[in-house]
Length: 463
Image 1 (cartoon, rainbow, N blue to C red):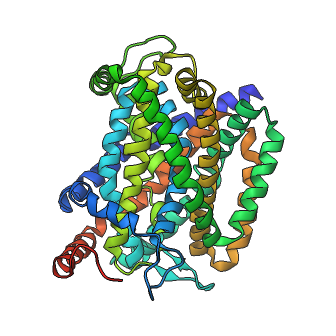
Image 2: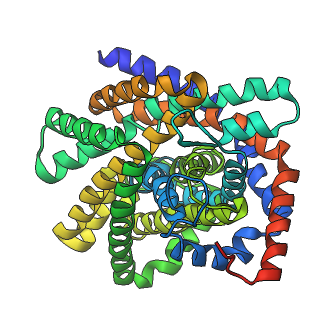
Image 3: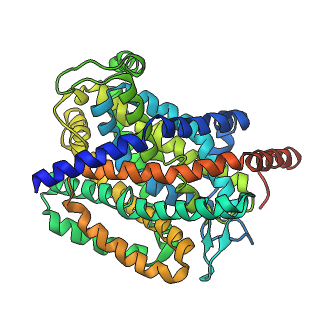
C-alpha cells in the first residue's frame, strides 16, 4: 500500500509541476497585473469604499433579484476561502518554499484583488435564474453569455464547470478540509478518525441540503467570529515578539529573491520554488482567478455589478493580505518553520510555544471551524457547476456524492491531498482567466459607468 501511495504521489507531483509551471503562473499573476492597470489600481484607491460597503452589506437591497444579502454572499465566499489555506497552506508554502514564499503569496493576492473584483462584477452582470428559482452565475455563465465567439464559449463554459465540480469533489472542497478537521480533532481532543468523519458528514448533510440560504446563515455566524479570534491570537504573538519584526520581514523579502539556505529542519529552497509555492498556495487560499468566489457573488441581492465586485474584492484582502500574512509572520518570527514539522503541526507549534495551551486550542478549534465552512462553501460552488452541466435534476445526486466523498476524506495522506488539490485548482483557473481577458472591455466599461454614477449621486448609491 505504501509503495502504491509513493508511486501515486510521484505521478501526481509530475502532473502538478506541469500544470503549475511558468505559463499558468504568468497567466494568473499577469491577468491580475493587467486588470490592476486597466482599472486604475482599484484595490488601492477604492478599498476604503469597498470596506464601507462591507459594513453596510448585511441588509439585502430592496426589490433586487438575488438569494442572499451581499454580506451573506461575501461570508459564503469567505467560508470557502478562509480555511486550511490560511493555516495549513501557509505552513506548507513556507516549509517547502522558505520564507520568501510569503512575499510571493502577498504579491499574488494584491494583484488578485483586481481579479476578484472583475470576476464578481461579471458574475452579477451575466447571472441567470435556474428552474428552481435560484440565482446561477459565475464563470460558466459569463463565458456562455458574455463571449462573442460562441465556438469558444461552447467549449470553455462546460470545461470550467467540469473542473469546478472536480475541485469541489476532489480538491479544495473535500479532502484537504476533512483531513485538517480530523487531524485537529485528534490533536486537541483525541477523537478517532472514524468518529470525526461520521460527525462531519452528518453536519455537512444537514446544512448543505438546506441550500444557499442555510449555508449563508451558518457562514455569517461562524466566519466573522472565528476569523477575529484567530487574528487576535496572531496579533498577541506578534506583539510578544515585536523586536523580531524587522528581521522577520527582511528575511521574507531577501528569501523571495535569493532563495533560502538550509536551516534546522528546513532543507533549503531556490527562488523559483518560493515563487511557485507562494502563488499556488495563495491561490488555494484566496481563490482569486480560480473563478469560484464569483459563484457566491452571483447570489447576492445587489443591483450594481460593480458594487458587488468591490465587496467581493475585500475577501481577498481579508483572506490573504490579513490572515495569511499574519500566519506566515507568526511562523517565521517564532522559528517554527525551521522545526521538523509540517502542516497544522507547524502552526500549532508556533501558537503553543507562544500562548501555551490556549494557543494550541486557537489553531485546532479555529481550523476545524474554518475547514467545515470551506466544505459548505465548496458544496455550493460544485452544485452551481452541476446545475450548469446537467440542470436542476443533477443537484440532489451531486449533493449525495459530495457527502459520501466527505466521509472518505479522512483516510488519504496529506501529501497526496495537497498535490491533487493543486492540479484541479490550476485546471479550473485556465478557462476563467481566458474569459476575464476576453471580457476586459466589459469590465472596464461597467466600472467607469458605476463610478460616474457615484459622482452624480454621492459615495453611497441608493438602493
